[in-house]
Image (tube, rainbow, N blue to C red):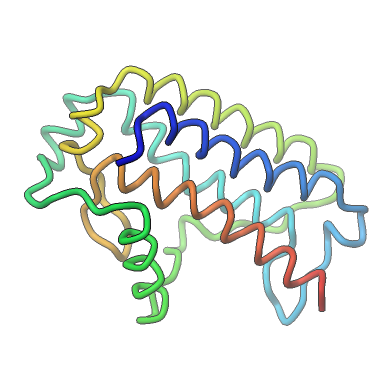
Length: 174
């Protein structure tokens, strides 16, 4: 099982890799949309939108306990969780409307990257207040995977950054 410190480090590193890659793109690449897919800026905006409700929920352990309860099964490993996520995607799982990014203009790229990096730092601080046991016991809902332990949710969000980095790379490769 991945420790909280390892999970936080990997969570940050994967997101930072996405931000650094997108920030290094020239304006044409940043704004490129292939087959009506999201631009690189929209990929970052989507990742930020997905982290917002997690940030809000992490502000109160009591809220999480009262609203969603506790996990009633063993925590999945990273590999198990990612396989479960991919199955969900293959079964038609998609981001709900509230996670769909609007267009991101080139002049807003610094703001989008900065907002995401700030959110990462805030979430890392928040998660620092949670014990290993709480990461496995407390749950939050995912739009198409159902209730996930906090550890599972952070496994997913760690992968999610890499997933969107690959989408940017595929779009640019043509």
